[in-house]
Length: 285
Image (cartoon, rainbow, N blue to C red; front, top):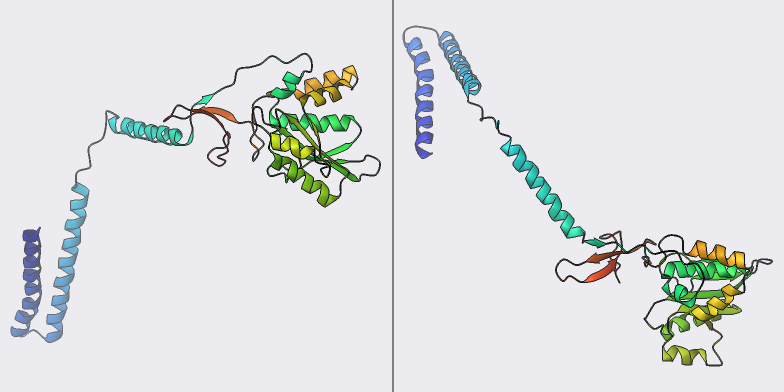
């Protein structure tokens, strides 16, 4: 690289010398100053045109890179892109295990009510109160503030009650759930505060409900079944079809109101339920 640079500098010095010497020689031989300078300019332009011509011809005759007639480069590029896509998919998606299909039940039972996922259970409780003649309005999906739906009198549209629904399976329902509902009922001066649940209440929750100052009532799956059985037979059947339509056992995401999917972690092999909107929503159980 250094040798090439020195050769370029030497060539430039020779060219500069020729351009300077020729006008001087012309002037010494009696040519006027203006004519000598004109010839100097002509020489400079000539050399520039010659250099541009050489550079242009060199660019045209420069050999092109060999064509890939085998398609190996294209295949390698596709393979690389496919590998990258697969890597990204593994980073954001885990294997999904689909739940086995179930046969629709033919009658109501406490076992069926206990199998309902929390979102379907809430809708059942809401419909049950509507069938009793009340106007039930659900709260928004997400943090419910201790209330899943409010009850209004159909005649006056006055808010008369607050209902909290819990379907936690084997997990016990703690006293904090009832305390929160009691706070809402007291703050809004409602006539009714009701906890509708499946599963078991903790010992503290049971003791709290027994206190005289607590106005909250509780209904478990046995009480709910009794309320359903008070309805006309055709209404019971219609409510059963409505409740068990589609997947009624797979839990829903409380943030997105979408069914969770069962996944298997690649590293640990652990099976868990996660939101279908992962990675935007990372809710798991």
